[in-house]
Image 1 (tube, rainbow, N blue to C red):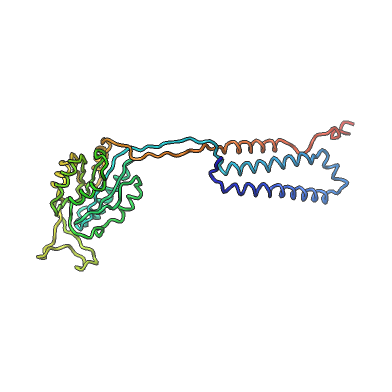
Image 2: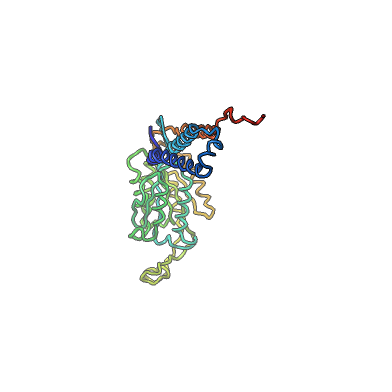
Length: 343
């Protein structure tokens, strides 16, 4: 037998000792009070029919019922069964652009904050899929390995900012290859990459990495964040320039624009899809519907023993004893109760 709350068993044996002592003290105190109130001569006449044996029985019923309630609260478990839980899904790596261009405010409050909201909304839609997170700018690193713990993935996502990757730039090829490495050597048909970026591939290696992903059968879905008209890149207030906007060597303000063409080519190369980030986030519904149609595999299998709860039996017995106690009077009817009433 096992117990859900074994610590309550300590109260059980303490109560088994204290409750009888308490009942004896109360009984003796009550007897003394009755004797002092009416006297030894009148008490037998007033207490005619009173049964000390029944009072003891009622006390025992009350004590045993309370002990049974404590026993039920401890959560007795008798018997068990083996349960195996299986989860099916895909492995999904999300590559998040944290380069300085993602600080542009053409999508308020900034491209990066919008991208993070997109990823959080996607995590809310996932169920049974392992998810990982890659942060990239001029270089890429695995921020969160593949996991079924979406809460942990959100925590890793929350701390991402423009300083997460020290090397400046936007290296789409490095991001894709880092995601491919994070998948490992397992079968590739259950895997996909989501690339969230403004698409300015300064390294020019994005398409080559996409071709490598296509050879492995891994689809890439790209989400473009930003406007194609161009937007200046704000600098942090504590930057050496004292805030303002990023400028090139000639002193001209650098403009950053969404490179939709590159992102679309990367997606098409792998059989994936390109979507622009929108306010209504309809693109996430389309991506999720496509991901739901991918072939899934068993990503988690866990066996555990489930014990059968048996608190109902001691609790039911305790209620029965209380009903018996309620129905059992302390007085017994005798023939002397009727003497003189019809004379």
